[in-house]
Length: 214
Image 1 (cartoon, one colour):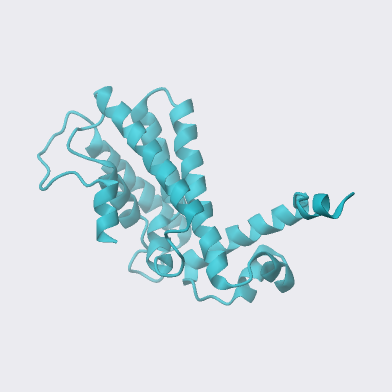
Image 2: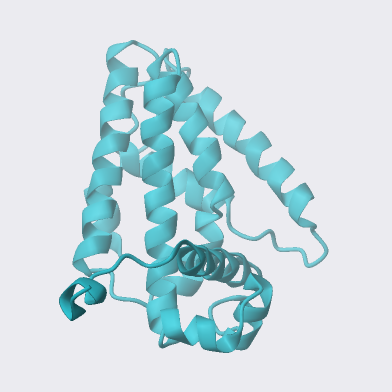
């Protein structure tokens, strides 16, 4: 085999699994303790050696970038699967909202927002695809008469982010937190259903509105 062919050889399956385990462990530990946790602790949580972690992610910034990218890609997969598999648009939207909450976006955003390049091309591309998929799904729900017309995609993500922030109590266990999150998300989703039962103050928030605030 030529040296050029060797250079482009795909990573081995076990190497890919190790990389995925590191990213998953980092996401969990960032949610629990913030982005400054020692990388050695992340390696321990992932069940790999320190050398394996540093071989895949030379520094903390690189690891954080891949955690964010992984969460965005998972959200994209979730919204596309929900749209393809659910019987109507609002059911798909509800499924996506609960799945997105399980990613604990609200817990991740404050600790990661300044720790990576948000304009990195791969991340921007996934983010735009996610926004387009959510916009498409919400548009379908409106046309089907299921989603009130005075809400937009930004409203949806503000709610998900706010409801998945850590609770202001130190003894709240993860399973209790998840119960509260999904309970209140369902209340929020019920409030999105058409016909609207109240008049909302202000105007619908879009993804562009959120970008201008960041």
